[in-house]
Image (cartoon, rainbow, N blue to C red; front, side, top):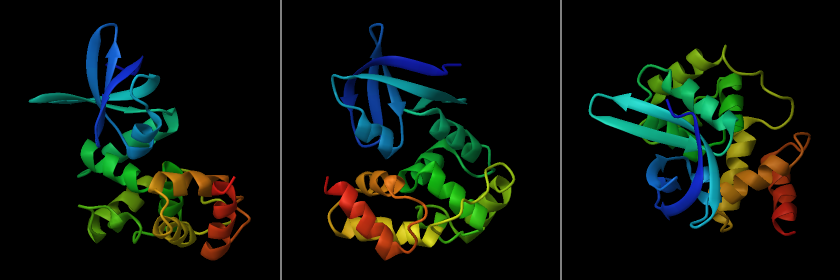
Length: 187
């Protein structure tokens, strides 16, 4: 198994990177956060998962171990493959998904293309014992509403999520979280 790699980004598209490692270009599929952070011509270090099927070997990579571990938890659920797991991680950070699962909120998971109510219920049921308890503070609906508000103001989803990560959990309510995030984004 390939558990990690370091190399230079030689190519990039909407779904993957090409990372040159010792003269070999490896195509690595990833979530949008990792793709946004990786710059063409720059060095990158990724934690990886090699998905083996009878007709393909596909490499998935993430800049942090937490995201990789969450990706592996997701693909461990019946009916959730690597592409769907990446789609889930494109919509929300592992922390946001953890909050959704801990609070039993399936409406957020159904925003992901290809995940209906039954699949969202199964994700919540299978992950609730495996992940941490919901932290005090902002609810998942506040977080979703805040991200959507920031996106409507012209910020990308990853910019909005990064700013909201920096907002203290004691700031409650979507409006208040958006105000605090805008102050962070304005710096």
